[in-house]
Every structure is written in C-alpha cells, then in structure tokens.
Image (cartoon, rainbow, N blue to C red; front, side, top):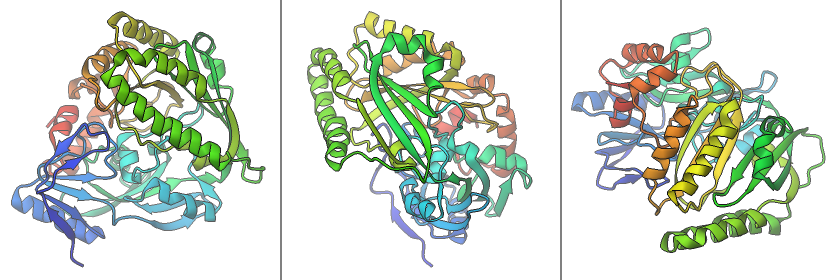
Length: 441
C-alpha cells in the first residue's frame, strides 16, 4: 500500500496557535511496515521524524522541519478482553472514538482529562491527566505498548517484557520510537453524578483537602479578579444507576453558547479593552455552574473547547496548593494584569511512571491560561517561579522554560529515561529543538 504523503509546502500549526512548523513532508502510514519504511527513508535522506497526534500540545513537541508522521490511519480498537479490562488500540485512535466501542463491552476509561479530541498516543506521551484523589493520569493506565524503533524494529513491551523501554515509552515524549499500539487498562462502565456550584474561594482554600476528598473527581476554577471558585464534583455511580442528563437546551446554552460563544466574544473584547475583564469575570462567576446531572463518565469528564488559548500547567506538592494560589492571586493584583481566563485546579494520586508529573508524589495541578491573542510570557514566567518553589513539575505538553538540567533535579529516574533513549535512538532520529532542550542531545 502506498503511504499517503504530501510536500511541506503548507505550514503546520498546533491547536493553540502557539507553534508554527514547516515539515519537509507529511506522512500518514497505515501500518507498521509503512512506518518502518518512512524511518528508513528519513535516515537515508538525513531527516528527522516527529510523530504527531491531534496537535493539542502547546509546546513545540511535535514540530519538525523534517518528516511529520501523522498517526491518523493507525487507529481503531484491535482487541478487547472484557474480563481483564484490557483494550488494545491503534495509537492514533482519538479518545472520542472510544465511546461506542468501550460502551459496547461494558467498559470505560478509569479517568480522563477534559479534552477528547487527542489521540491515545499523544495523550499518554505528554502526560494527560484528569482529577481525583485516588486516580492517576492516562499513562499509568497503560499496560502494554507496541512501537517501531529508529532502526525499523517492531517491538512489544510491558512490565515484564523489555520493562525499562516500557517505563520510559509510556510517557516518552515521542522520543523513543513511533507508538503503533497501546493496551489500556479499563474499568467497568460507570456513570458520574456531577454537582457544579460556585463557592467562596477563601473557603475552598481553607478546606482544600476536605473538598477534594468530598467526591471521586473534584476540580475547581478561579476567575481572576473575583472571590469565587466554581467547584466541579463528580461522584461515581454504577452503570445500572438511573441517568439524569442535562436537557439538550441546557447543554447547548451552557457548553456552547456561554462557555464557548459568549466567552470567546468577551475574551476578544478584553484584548481590546482590558478594563472590562474584572466585571466580566465577576459576571461569569455568577452565571456559570449551579447545575446537577448524571450521565456516562466520558460525557461528564469531557467538554468542548472552541476558544483557543495558551496554557501552562504545573504539578506541585499537594499540601502547598492553598499557599501557592494565594501567591498567584497577590501577584496578579500587584502587577495590575487583567486575566480573562480562569485558573484550573486539579489533583492526582502518585504513580510509578518515570516522567509523570505525579511520579511517587500525590500532586495538585495549577493550570494558567491566556486567550491566544493576549500576551502571555510575563504572566506565565512569574507564575512559573512561584510554582517551581513548591516542587513544580511542568506538564510536558504545556508551556514552560525548563531544560534537561532542571528536569534531572525533579525526576529521580530522568537519567534512566536518557539511557533508554541512547539505546533505542542513538542517532536521534526523533529529535527536535524541544527535545534537545528538555532531554538534551
């Protein structure tokens, strides 16, 4: 079968419009043999290769001036072991395409972030996570991988077969090979009872641990220039429970008209007239929330995101969250910034994934955003300094300025990852400028 490809005449942009790249060619292999063929040709021509999923990373992790290797055709459910809860997928499968196949087997992903347009490979390779005291990120739900290495070898790995490659590659930044299949540990299908309500921010910070333990999956948003937090608490129910979904009109009103349409307009207005941002945020804090409903887990976990933005997110020592957020509030006030986007606060259990932001540490996550037309560097850099002081580890797919030396100080197994990289890609076929910075050459 001929590999679908195109010349690099058309630039590639990521979803957040924070990255622009000009690949020499874009390749869309349909199977592992075609992946190996692309890698052989790249080495012959002296080109590098970067796998790319849905482009939802804000960093230039997928950027290349060599070959951009898209995983779109390496998609679909390959096998399901419902009794064991194991689902083998093509690495290019979009998360939203799992809804039907998993439901048909009475299964669901244990935890999810709020974006379902990502590919499975992209989500695990950059450390996508959701929220919940007792739940880990997606990479920790990976039980086995299949990938094509730089030399064209097709290899399988898991906890007992090539375990070091498995530990490094299940959150491997696309630096170790091209993922072609991923086996995920799933759980019996369940519903989520959602309770979304505004609360005084001071009370949320004072009772942070109790609030985060009050339901299975809890997060909150704080709109700068307000004293209100929007708390979203989701409680797991068995699939046999009675669903009570939002009426269609309410879903369209909240998720499309208000959270995307009106919010996009107010962000644009705030760019032109920053003085309107504080009153608009106070209005939004009053209007958004105050709803309860029960629906399938993936329906509740995920939300449409149509307003483009730039984002930075750090995992910090969990107990430091109230103090860190208070410092950020004071910083915004002292600098006189007008910030239209809310901060998002989540938590995750510790895991054993070598490059996970929650490696062996229960973590709290602080995500800051700016509308894509607003300046972001000064705000992000100042917040980064606060979060680094509390053990901060940046999300691999979101903006930050750290380099390999700083990561080595924050990840006990960092050099083990580099050793695996030296073994499987000694010539750095998969390198780009971002990997040079965060992993070294």
